[in-house]
Image (cartoon, rainbow, N blue to C red; front, side, top):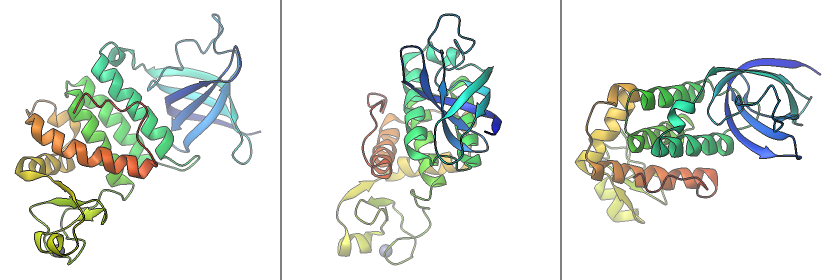
Length: 246
Ligand SMILES: [Zn+2]
């Protein structure tokens, strides 16, 4: 069986036996890979402390042909997420990110841009970005990278400029005021502040946005849009959604 040495984020652990876990990794080159960490729950396990959510690690995995579970051979921590887990709002963003990545990415599919987004979100949180901003930023970009959250230049009905931005649920896209009147089914208007926030998120890194103050109401408007759109994309709401954040 081939061994795969990869950089990866640890996502989620599921108990397999009294001493072992199934661990999902988000690898840089091969997307989500699930593998058994034998004996990882034992006190003297060499994996102890390494298989924590959103730790960036170098892992050696023995991968089976096809889609069967692999086996974890070794794990070295490159960057621990322990510093972020000391703060509950930040920790809740990390757990929600891990759930989005585990549920929303295909197994064994390369996801280089999403891998970089994950790193950028962690970097932004470490640079002092408020957790609600980080959470909305991560969701917005995750959707954009997967072709779900459409660009803002065109109305889905008539191809004209759709501003002021209104997202229609049934169209799954922006509708201009005229098309909204004709075929609108209900949705969310971002408002001027929400549009400014969205444009800032599309143009700048989270780390760069960390020092800006965005009105909570604007974050709420965009947050409501991306959370619902993400739940549709994933086929259901997040179990770990940090709903009290925005
Ligand atoms: Zn239109």
